[in-house]
Length: 420
Ligand code: GLU
Image (cartoon, rainbow, N blue to C red):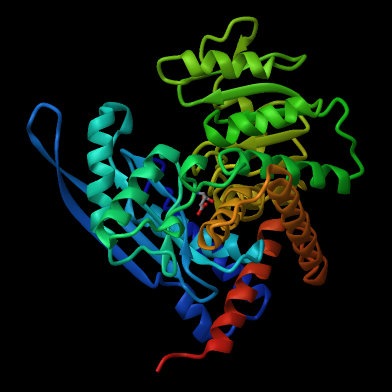
């Protein structure tokens, strides 16, 4: 639960029940989906650089295995909670179902402040955490990937630890790996690129061209920075960017390549203090008079305290769970189109799927193949969500996306039946 009293797992259950009602979901299937399949809590030791021992707390939650192996990232964060990981695992179930790739949902993480750990400590912590997960993960059962504060380097340690223990190199056990050791071309950029494709499609369907479109972005990590780069390259004006430490605003559009360069040299990788721009706070960004807002940071960003101030007609959710159910209701009422996380940021897991397939086949794709297949999958999913909205006569795309996803998972459960 966050300091504001927001509980992400309760929020996910509220959304699930709303979708279940819309599609008249069988009560027994709802009972299954209201609980995760498996939850692992692990306390594991790591020797720190100065020789003292620390115990870390880690989680892995598998929400659903019904459509294929569980799939989802691993995050490192000081305020991580089990309820948050359960919520994120369920979101992965819906996300993989919306884009119709053959996976279930999972998520994991370690409670830690990665900025306070040395490279060696981070590596030892990752390896020991992987050891704790050894009976849970695997190319046919559960496949981790990067998430908040983890990256390709962390994935290569997971690959190596798993492979050392099993005695052979297992490319399919983790995605988001460096390309040199079986990663997919385009995986690092995939979430930001996918978010851009989805925004383009949403604008196209509203009859808007990209000309003069003004975008505000919260978060400048992997998702936000690549999203800004693709938007800038395509001629959009990214007028504001904020992150955990500060923000910048320029009415004529920020120079994104320069901002990326600047933040890469900032001690906290922040945009704070970028010259030739005004400052902007994380709260101000949601009230900006822009065409699109892309929340690409953490959960609970758009809540009942600021949803009323939103002027943008379109929100594309780069982060997982950035809008609380109360805020969702306010935005729906105002007529704001919200392209939900489970569709908008599904580009990452979609290219993870391509990476998993390439790893299992030991046969690798070009960047054109990856990007074309990514666009095709996202545009198709976007249209399927729109069709669901029409079918159920609902304007809220989150409920439509959930109706599509939950319906697909329910069908898989029904076809497989209940064991034994
Ligand atoms: N962590 C990313 C997400 O939330 C990617 C997951 C994956 O590639 O498995 O979608």
